[in-house]
Length: 466
Ligand SMILES: Cc1cc2nc3c(=O)[nH]c(=O)nc-3n(C[C@H](O)[C@H](O)[C@H](O)COP(=O)(O)O)c2cc1C
Image (cartoon, rainbow, N blue to C red; front, side, top):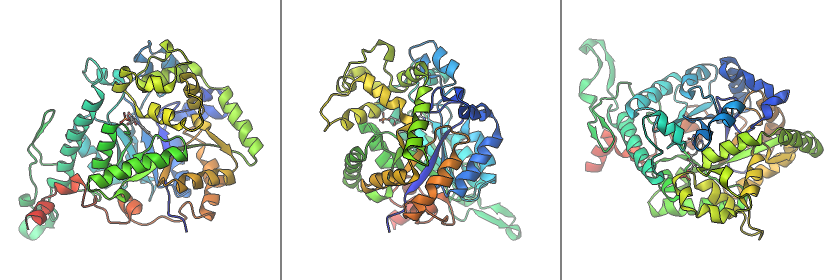
């Protein structure tokens, strides 16, 4: 029996997540409903029917082509613009589901860690322990400018900032309230035991937070932690903080290499590599025959809005796409100093993936390849299951399933692909009870004992002193 894989549904509360331009087709017009709650309610009910582990909601806090352009391409195309706040939808989706995890992206620039830790504790209560946080440092210059910065903060400095941000959150979630602080005891006139609730008195380069945390401990205390950095600083951050990390790998062979690097790093830092799940994006077009799948894929590609795509990749990579000769090789681009301040791992992964087949991949090739993101693999449910098996054999622990349209598409996956995956033992048939963390790791509700969040617990201090 193969080991169980993790499946997240990749969503974004925006007109066009990765299918830039597809909204102009009849099927794509379902995206007009992106500001309504009801379509998302339908999505999560479908996901739970298909035994998805979690909904994963991406988020950015700026406009893509304000990086270099005037904003018109992504604004005109509704390309990851506008962006309703994903935190606001979690309670509603939690109420209409019972098991589905809800992972919400929030970057370190957009809210103070005290306010954010309070929001996530509240949501973890309201969902009975099903919340996860995708920790991101943000890559959009316009996003930084929206929060009072003149410019984007340098790449590795963002990770330092993120470390202090999560340290504050860990202290609020794990250290401020001891176990047993909630007493509900009319006889002694104590709803809570003040002796067990503490200030955190955090003082760091960016934050001063007194505490105590003003929400009582939620079922998981610290939500499940997702993260996606794969630069050296990003990997260090993942090893230290993440429970689930995204690999940028575009082939199973590349994933095998990326996993080996992460596992070696984990071991070198005394972390059990198995406590960090490594997942990749899986983007499919489904057909009842291969021919039908390819036809649907062509239809999707025929509607790509290349202007919007260029704006997306300029903002995402920090490279002024419009000024680059499409014949420039990826290796050359990857090594350019200007790339260092932005997203590095996508370029590195693409450059590395090319090793082995000889021909240098150019920037033009890269864009075209990425244009295919919403439909990189077109096939029948059986062929998709074969593809899932190839990734599993390379050692990945699961997938962010990338839909063609974020709304309306999921029935296809759940009705056609999930039964085949279940039949082959590649997807769960029933949910394990309990919190999201216990569902994923089968090791209780609390963050694992080697994690820095666990180390700040009052009880952990005592155990260490004993
Ligand atoms: C699957 C996946 C989802 C991501 N979601 C977001 C997101 O919602 N918001 C965001 O600002 N960055 C997102 N990122 C970008 C990462 O947070 C990070 O900036 C990127 O992986 C580059 O990190 P690196 O420079 O350490 O390699 C995502 C990355 C991946 C691979």
